[in-house]
Image 1 (cartoon, one colour):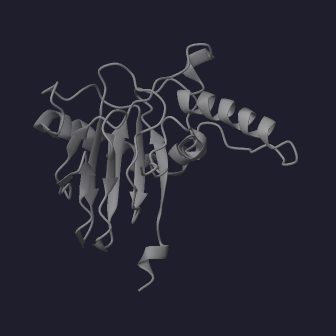
Image 2: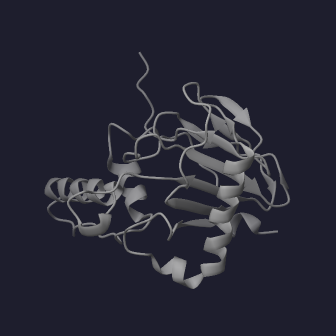
Length: 206
């Protein structure tokens, strides 16, 4: 009981492919980081299911991975930009049923069966019928800023900063929003404040 409250997510980076600042969570769980990216390498060698129409091969090993526990996502696109010829891959782990991964309206059971998709172009979500404890790993490679040494700040940070500044100009009586760089804070800000990319807003009925 109460497992629905035991949920959350965090993002790690692959120290072998990521050239920016290594986040604190990597230093806290180094063995977990190594295992997660070794698992991606295994999936790459064995072949991965894909719901993409324009490619048949797994891309390069990713720079990032989001680790989630008992998290449900409403339909959305991944914010920011991706590196060229890279895609996202998700796999579910744990003792659970339901909770399919939905891409463009089609459901996929990803429990111990990885799936490749394009999170930046394909709308995706998770079904809300999960029973049990569910973990998921989502590997991806975002575009990194070229005007920072060693790609220190990702595109999501740059976009979030611009949105925060615009938000502050519109609400002068409120203190500016603050967020942690190189964290998932920027993803939340982008999904809430980015009008063009956010898919949570209901369309008007005619």
